[in-house]
Figure 1 (tube, rainbow, N blue to C red):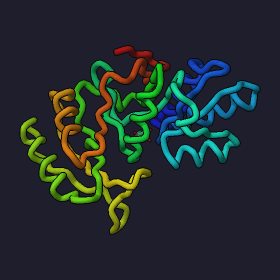
Figure 2 (cartoon, rainbow, N blue to C red; figure 1 turned 90 degrees about the vertical axis):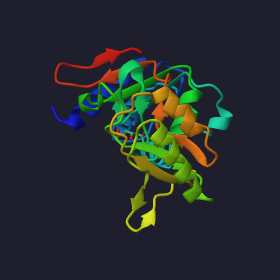
Figure 3 (cartoon, protein in one colour; figure 1 turned 180 degrees about the horizontal axis):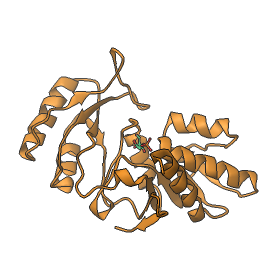
Figure 4 (cartoon, helix red, strand yellow; figure 1 turned 180 degrees about the vertical axis):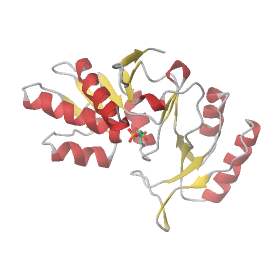
Length: 230
Ligand SMILES: O=C[C@H](O)[C@H](O)[C@H](O)COP(=O)(O)O
């Protein structure tokens, strides 16, 4: 079973958690895209949902499928958010942001009563950190911010320095107008400590550690979908 088949498998499986009348957050990325497509099928079949999106990319996909995306500020608390991840670790601690959507994703996740992460089996790991941790940085005075990020990383025994994400020769700019730096941590032994130390830095808008946010993980694989809880 290919990774893409597993992504479809979990995107389809997540639809079982969606009930008529719910307010639902749509995640970003190649896995979440399968969920968006499955939701579009449900709506075609008559289900009524209020939908919000975690990125411009997802809004474009949803609208191309005929879905209506509402402004999160007009919707209030969500019943459910379904999104992909780059790594799913112990306790359903996650690394997200491989698609640079981490800030809007985290805002939507924090405004949802229940969050489901969907991923193919290769992303289920014993220790977070093989996937480079994305950090979203305010562009003004970014060099100083990156120096302070590097100091924090050293405190956590992470010796790899932040690397600016680029699109060709240009810096990658997020939907919110910020820069992304990726850190090849290797292994993150203290995710909670690292998360709060990074978040405390002026200039760090947010980072891709999603801790204590996922309520359920659906992990794809040849033996079917595994359902995990924190
Ligand atoms: O910024 C992007 C998101 O956090 C994605 O959910 C994450 O990168 C996983 O994407 P994919 O399903 O394409 O691997």
